[in-house]
Image (cartoon, rainbow, N blue to C red; front, side):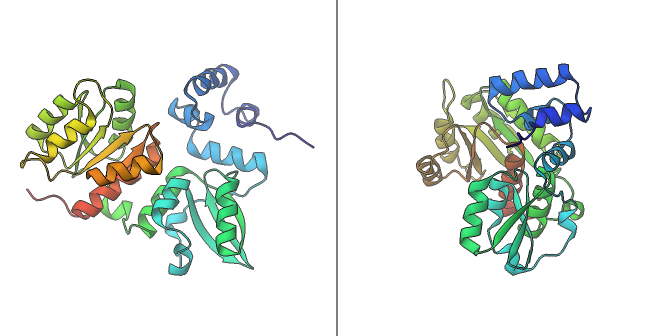
Length: 284
């Protein structure tokens, strides 16, 4: 059986990266456990489109683009909800001859493909696309948010609280690209102080921090009439259903699991803003 070429090999052969760049990316991939494609993109060595084309070429899939501009029926979109679309990075394209054509960032996610095929009774054919394509399409067709009509998140201020500088910087960089106004704090006590002084529209806070933990900070926010209205999204390294249920029961608006996926982070931030505030600028 012929061996499929690895992503790095394909990018190297296509001269998208050189050997030194690939080695540096591989070392970071091994040390962090993050996907090689994510590392290459973060280091500025490749674009999302480069990775999508390489994957498609590697495994013989077709690529798709400009998904958000197309029209999709309510029945097609009802195959799964927007949260699953963001979580699994997929979008339904069309059903034809008992075949579901599915835009996917990871066309090798056989568990998702098999589950969807079992649920629908359809043969599933993956087509490769980029995370941004999925995000824009989901925002428009599932959450009724038009990026071009509504513009970036320049109306909104987000406070990021995490004791790890790298994590905090990565979160802020992802949100900055969307146009959000950003505040930061490295511990719970400072987070409360900034929240009281600046009144952000949303707080994203780690649950485990030295000194005042994220939970203690959250309880302090909830007990203060001046800021208890501010929604808080928890950052947690635990991804179990029990952890999610516990945090939502405590009153957190949502949960983002570490290591933070930038696409999921942005999608959940926009979702929170839309649910709490709508698409209009904040008063004042």
